[in-house]
Structure formats: C-alpha cells, structure tokens
Image (tube, rainbow, N blue to C red; front, side, top):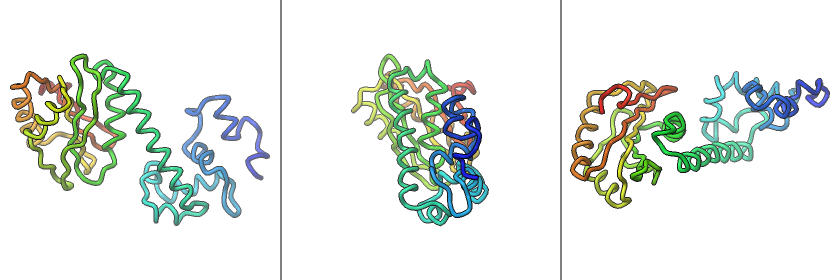
Length: 224
C-alpha cells in the first residue's frame, strides 16, 4: 500500500498540516523530505530503513556525500537538498539572534552556538561580539585546533574587538570529544582574555563550552 492509500490522518504531510511538525516522528519528517520511496518501499519505510542504517537522524544528517549517496533511494540531488536545508536552519538562527539581545535570549544563543559548533570534527574557538546594548554584531570563528586543543591568542581577540567596536563578548568553543566539561586550560585562557579585554573596558559576559547535546556556561558556574 502506498502512502496515498493510507488514512488521511496518518499521512505525514496531512498529519503535519493538521497537528503541526512536532507531532511527526523522525521517520515521518524524513519521508516528507525524501518525497518518494525505493523499490518495494514507500517513503516512510525507506526513511525508517535509513535511520536504522545510519543509527540516528543526526548521523544521517552528518554523513558525508559518499556515504549518504550509498543509501537506497538517495543520491547527489538529495544530499545537496539536505545540506542546503541545514544551512538555511543555521542562517535562520543567525538572523533571529541578530534581532534579539543575546543576554535576554540565552536559550536562543545556546541553540545558535550549538548549531554552529556541535558537530565540528576539530576544536573551534569563536566569539559572539556584542554592542553596548548586547545586540549581536557578529559571530566570528577565530582559532582552530586539533581534537585536543586550539591555540588561542588574546592579542588577536583584542584586535578583532577594536576593529568591530564591540562593547562585550561571549566566548565559545567546542569539545569534539562530546564532553562539555571545561578543562583547567579553558579556565586559564578565559582569565587571560578577561584581563586583556578588561584594559579596554570590554566585558566577557560568558564562555560557553559546546559538547554533544550539552553546553556548559562559565557564568552559570560563577566563574566570571
């Protein structure tokens, strides 16, 4: 039986329209994206097969082009569509955050930074630069490292802050290991950056460490 022969309330598209996207399972959402199934499978069955093969929706989304296109019913066109969808999501969060005040929207800030850094294979150190009303000026990736560490130079942070006229910053970096717990080195570099920016009367409002599904805030820990 094809999906068009299902009861109307169980078809993914109709279900989304009547109950909202949150009511759909990962397989149903993926089926809407796939649009068609494969030989002997409707779109929902294909979606379930793919989720089982890749292990999760996230792993499917993170698959590189070659592994993605090996799946039944998949190809380069769907890979391009999927990557474009992910980038649209990042830009949506970017645009939304720019309209908000970073400190009055802490959850949005976390969502944005997680979307930017959570799945990077190496460590990335970045800044969220804010004006004197805590509105976002720019998100800027500054340093890149190995799986273990990124070389962070306060003088380059100072130069960027002066160039963009920032009044405050939120520091952020990821732990590719997935464990968000800050290291002693993380705390030491934060203190060095605080001291350097303090000479310019620029505040470090927070330092967020992004792990796998968890983000640790220095401010919430009372370390700033």
